[in-house]
Length: 70
Ligand SMILES: [Zn+2]
Image (tube, rainbow, N blue to C red; front, side):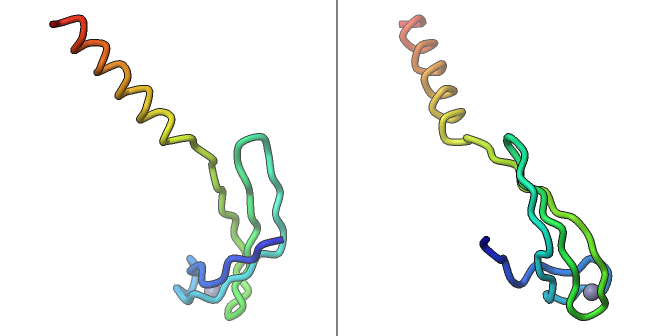
């Protein structure tokens, strides 16, 4: 399991949180984090997005529109 260090604690503002649990769903990863300093626990959610393919699709649509205009 990959541990991301340096994530800022929302309670005390120090970059001292560590991941205590990771659960992954189909397209997102939920991490439960706890602050090393104040003990505050919170969750972060990472959503996986295929941005590059969306941009390619948009570029294709623009290209087709230009061809249709000409
Ligand atoms: Zn803290």
